[in-house]
Length: 61
Ligand SMILES: [Zn+2]
Image 1: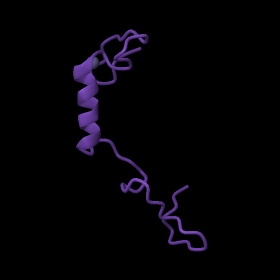
Image 2: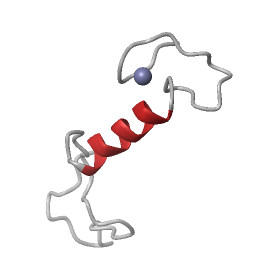
Image 3: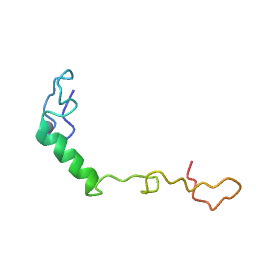
Image 4: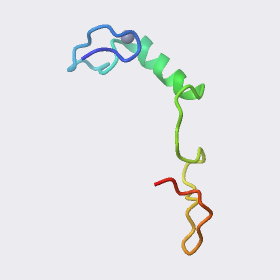
């Protein structure tokens, strides 16, 4: 397997897998924190906007 950050070959049994090491794992976390990855669901954890009996057109499924 390859590291998703730097594309270096990674030992899949490594503790750091799927990353090649601590550095790339932290870089990946940073990508999430910076909003570089798009999340299609509402960004408020634990809140479900789908209220039973209503339909505001927010459900994209
Ligand atoms: Zn890497």
